[in-house]
Length: 135
Length: 171
Image (tube, rainbow over all chains, first blue to last red; front, side):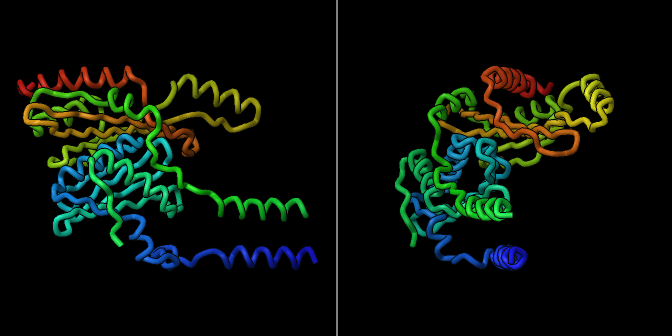
């Protein structure tokens, strides 16, 4: 009986594991929902200023900047205070700029919308601009 | 057996419950840290400051890993020994006498990023951040930390001022 229970438990735990493809493509999560909480729009056209403020905000939050590319509009860093990786991308859209952040800690994506909201709050204060939801 | 099942279940439940919703909230010290990590230079020549920064990083034995002139970023890293060879030897011998394998802090990798931002038409703000990862002799990560010692940053900026002068004079 105990063995049977253990086999069942093991099977359940294994079944909960995602396949390689699911893990590689994060296909268990909705793209739209993810973009929704990871993206904010700022009413400005000054891309360089936005990127400079993203760098400053990340530094305030304990990140060491690892990569920055003005043309591609991406900034990546690693936080030595909470051991998370973050990439922030910046895109121009009409008279506003879209900022998208995605972060992970170890083997796990940060999927808590509140964490991103905290980041955008800090960025808004640095930019003196309101972060508008996109979707 | 019941204990084992309980531990397995608890482990599963706990791993599913880890929440990071409190990430990315600036802590109480971020403004003082910003001051420690930042200096303002009376120049408008970002390129000159970046070149002087790169020269200084080379002075300090770093390998430059990334740079972007427009954003004014340079990042670099270096691997160094942690502790003395004599100390490690003593630990190894002591452990061997006890029939064990010695485990000690062996190497440390330093990371640095320098960001130069024009604040107005007359000045450029330079902010530097240092961090390191410490590894033991088995290759395991022992410590991950951002370096916040004020003296480290004061000395760095003294060296940077010197580097700006030396580089401007092609030394």
